[in-house]
Length: 226
Image 1 (cartoon, rainbow, N blue to C red):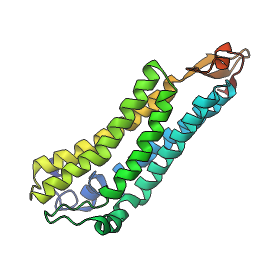
Image 2: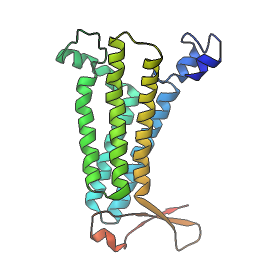
Image 3: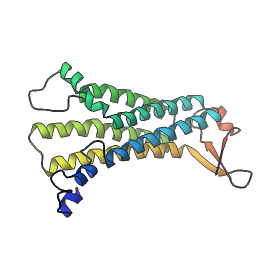
Image 4: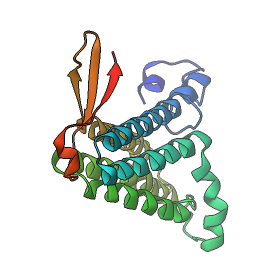
């Protein structure tokens, strides 16, 4: 938002190359790379937590983390390939709005969002305390931003609003998605404790069990080299 306002140059104004590279409204640029990287990193982190949970004997929690890892990985793939925007044709087959609402992909997208919501809720049900609420808050903010804020943008377009209010809305959408993913990443980090290993130069990563009685024995752990 700041670059076109502060720098008067053909590259930074009127959809110049630098403006397009930085604009969160445009796909396949720096903000897209950042979002895909956040989602991919979180999916990997969820997978690592799933392995640690399995090593501690918390099998139910492990499956929950694996489910979250797969779903977030698919969101990363969707963001990278812009698959959701290709669902417009399916949405137009379901219903056609006469009001000028442009984002027909939201109709099949609601089904995909429901799948993600159910997967994260199943994981949250197996957790407790801070970790649970981070998963709930992160998932809710991510899905509300991706679907709710996108619908709001469509309403602004249908109302012929393309000024500062519309620009602020799509920036809020992207910010909300990123913060939601960061909360999910924080949830995964809060489920793991790092301790110095018995030998010098080593760190032991331990899963903090939430519901499995066997896991509370603390007999199993996974060691990672520093």
